[in-house]
Length: 482
Ligand code: F0G
Image (cartoon, rainbow, N blue to C red; front, side, top):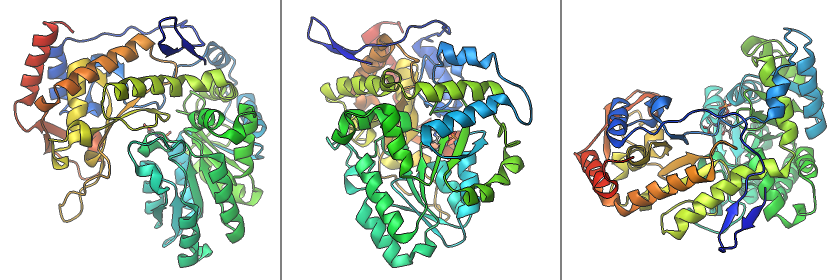
C-alpha cells in the first residue's frame, strides 16, 4: 500500500482495496456512553459491542476478509477425516514455511498448550524476547518459567529504534551458561512483540539467536501470530531485506526456526491456528494431543470454512499491499498523536497504537488503574473501545499487595482493513480533546475483583464524580452532540 503525498503536502496511507460488504455502525450519544460504561463496571471488556462505535479492543478474529477468502469458504470440503480443505491448508503452509509437519489447532493458545505440554518440564526455563499472557500461563502450568530477555532498548517507551522486539543474545548465552542447556525447554521468539506495542524483531537478531541455539542444541520456536506486520517492517526497515520479496523474507525466517506456530485470528485474517514443525520426531510427540484437545488431525477444531479462508489469507499475507495496511494506518495515527504532543509508544509498531498513560495521566496513581481510567474516559468521549494494558492486567500478589506494571498503556488495536481513514481521524480528534482535558480524568477502584484474570471480568467505579465533570465539559465544547 503506497503512502501518497497530496498536493497540499499532507502524506496519507492510500487503501489498496475497496469495500464490498459493510456492517452498520452506530455512535451512541455521550449520555448513553456514560450509562454503558457504568453498566460495564468501567471495564471495556464488559461493554456490549452494539454500544461501541470503533472497536479497537483487539485485532484478533476481527480483521476484514477479502472477496477471495469469502469465495473460498463456499467450496469447503466438510469431512471429519481426510478433508481436501485441510490438504489445501497443509500444502500452503509447507509452501510458505518449508516445514513438512503440520498440526492444526482452534487458536494460538491451543498451540501453546500443546508445545508446553510436550516441551516444558518442571523446573525448566523458556527464554523469550517478551512474554504473551497465554504463552506464559501454559509454560507456568507445566512447571516451567519464563525468562524475558528483551533487549534493553525494547522497553524505552519513546525511541527511534527500528527493532525494539530484538532479543538480548548475550543474555541468552548467560542463561545457558548459568542453568545448562538441558534446563532450557525451548527458546521462543515472538515477532511482532504484542505486549510492548507490536514491536518487530529483525532478521539479523533471529539469525544470532539461531546461532546460540545451534551452539547449545536448543529448539527455536517462533510465534508468528503478528508476523504479517513484522514482515512489513523487515521489508521497510532492514537493509538486508529491501531487495527480497515478502515470500523470500518469510522463507529466510522459517529456515532459521525449528517450530513456527500462530494464531490465525491474526495471521491470515481468519480464525484458527497451526503448528509447523521441521522434525518428524517432535511432530510425533505432539500429534497425540491434537485429537485430545482440538479435533481430528484434519481440522484441529477449526471449521472447514475458516480453514479455506485461512489458506487464502496466508497466500494474501505474501502481498506487500495487504500487509502494509495495518502498520501504515497505525503509523498515521501514532504520527498525528505524536505531532500534537500526545504521549504514545514510538516508533509506531504493528497491532495498534499504544497510549503511554504514565505521561498522559501523570496525576493519576498507578494504584488507581490509570490505564483503565483512560480506557473508560476514551470510551465516554468517543465510543472508541480500547484495551487496558497495565496494572489492572496484572495479578494481585497472594499477600494482597498490588504489583505495579512496568508500563501503563491503552492499546488501540487496528483490525486489518476494517476502519476508514476518517474513522481513524475521528479517534485522533477525540483523543486530542481528552488530552486537552486530561486533568478532569480521575482514577478507578475495584468494586468486584475476581481472583484470576481480573481484567476480563472485574468491575470498577470512579474514585470521584470525574466522569460527570468530563461529560459536562464535552457538552460545553461540542454542544449536546456526539
Ligand atoms: N501469541 C500472540 C503474540 C498473541 O498476540 C496471541 C493473542 C496469542 C499468541 C494467542 O492466540 O488468541 O488465538 O489464542 N493475542 C490476542 C490479542 C488475544 O488481543 O492481542 P489466540
